[in-house]
Length: 120
Image (cartoon, rainbow, N blue to C red; front, side, top):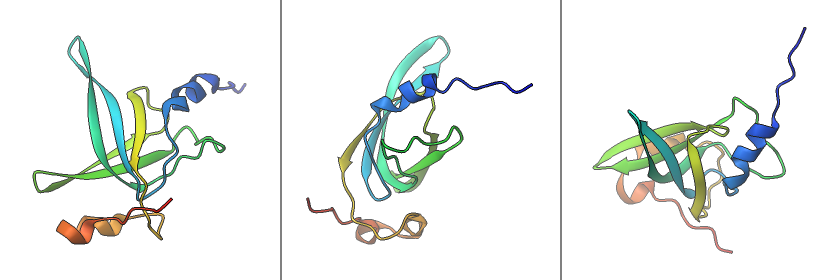
C-alpha cells in the first residue's frame, strides 16, 4: 500500500523564489525560531551549486548552496528548495560563469573570488 504525497503544499512554497543559477548573488530571507520567538534573518551570498527554473519543479530532496565571506571566514549554507524556513529569495546580481558547480571559489580570496556580472 503506497501513500501518494500531496505536492501542492510544496509547490506553493517555491512560488516566492526568483529564478537563479550558479554565479548569481542572492538574498534569502530565512525564518529563525529561537525559543518561542520567530524572526526573519537575511543571508546574502553567491550561489555555488543548484539552480531554480520555474518551468522545472525541483524534487523534494533537492538543495542549493549559498556562500559568503563573513569577517574573513567563508560561510556556506545548504538550503532545501522546499524548506518552510525560506521566506523569500531575491536575485540581486546575475553572474557570468561557465561551470555549474563553483566549488573553486572556496580556495580563492579577495579580488580573485569575484564573479563577473552578466550583461543584459
